Length: 300
Image (cartoon, rainbow, N blue to C red; front, side):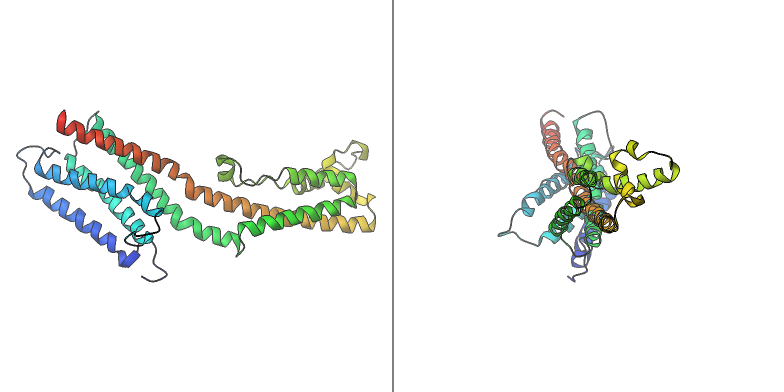
């Protein structure tokens, strides 16, 4: 296997070919066998395909154990994952042939629907697994999330030190910006990639626009958000003006870093959120499969 192989091309697409061979053999057997009536799961072919499908479902669920096993586990994790994807996909055809395309309002159809949901959530997992690691690498630009967070904290300290030497109002603006920086948080916040660090910078841009449109606004009536522009407009000394520009540069730099961190968290959340559907429904599928087998042998 080359270093460029993905999980889909692992070992020259070994598990793709195995899946195609299994699917072709199932189709040939289905078309050659004459059950003497409508095809269904109660024929010897139906039982055979059903057994293969059930065995595959149980084996596929063992992948979760394989991911957490680091000793005495045959095969590589990437090989297991490649097999998991391809053989999991083959279940759609195998189960359709097993039941002879017969459905109804019963536990058997419920098991099939659960299986489809699990498989298609797995397809989404493959998509994010192939897409988001590359996006995370490009977004980080060779830096780790921890390093970016440390730089954000350092910028916060430098910004507060600069603001201290300008004016209490400016210090308040910067302090609120730091307090409103929220990286991570709940699932929805992570998925939106909203970092909340742009209060001071957005306030500055908004204040500049407002000042252009409202030249007659009195200084005494300006809210705190206009403090930085008020100083740049002429009230600040040369030294304060230089410090203010340095402060704006720091805030802009922090915003860029915080956005990268928020996006990194978003990508990681996207890589994990689908598992909250895939894993629980896999266990629901296993329960439905047991009910399906039990009812088929004892009540059907």
